[in-house]
Length: 68
Image 1 (cartoon, rainbow, N blue to C red):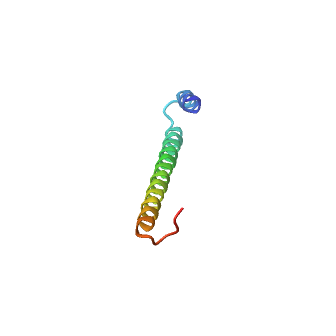
Image 2 (cartoon, rainbow, N blue to C red):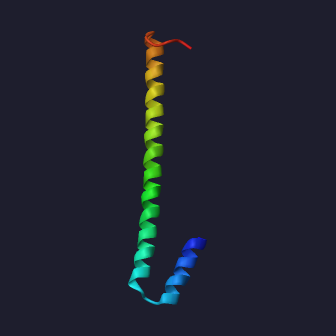
Image 3 (cartoon, helix red, strand yellow):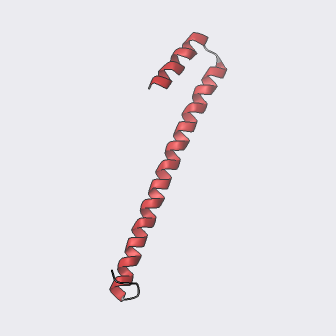
């Protein structure tokens, strides 16, 4: 919030400067991309862990894998 507020105040000080608007757009895009990447990584990790658990359970049931 503080960064956005400072950016907003900074832009108001400059008036309607297109380069300032570009900086804000770039910052927003970077934040969005970072959030999307984090979400994708979390989803992939959850799916991989779930698949591993399912595979381990199946192997134990069929007597293929090591029994714990």
